[in-house]
Image 1 (spheres, rainbow, N blue to C red):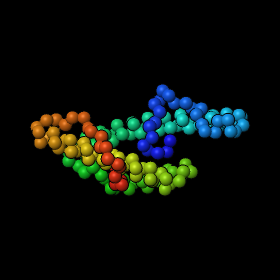
Image 2: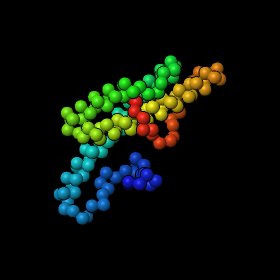
Image 3: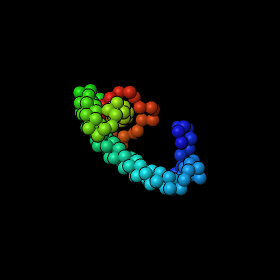
Image 4: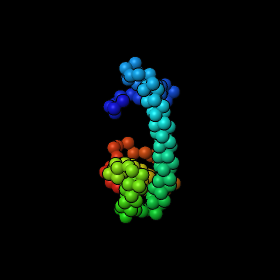
Length: 147
């Protein structure tokens, strides 16, 4: 599924053997392909859970920044992180430009979340209430860079 507007199947209906190649290639080739794809599926699941953990941590950063009226972005930290991950990518034989794009996407999401947390915190302060749970912004990620 490459189009964003297509409905995705739910996790319960996921078929790891689904392929438009079924019946078109030798069974042994298909078996090897499915075996490799199984590993990819496991890695993808791990990435999702790791990203969830990362965003739980950055949410705490967002609350701390909001409470102390700190800016959502930290360009010095962001630059250092990008340089660090580019080096790690090179060591791992991963395209550093890809690693940077991926990190920039994540950082953009983090900044949007921090901005939303700050807005909620500021609104709660104006109303004399404690800030509630953060809202997750719905617009597309910004091109800004922050971790």
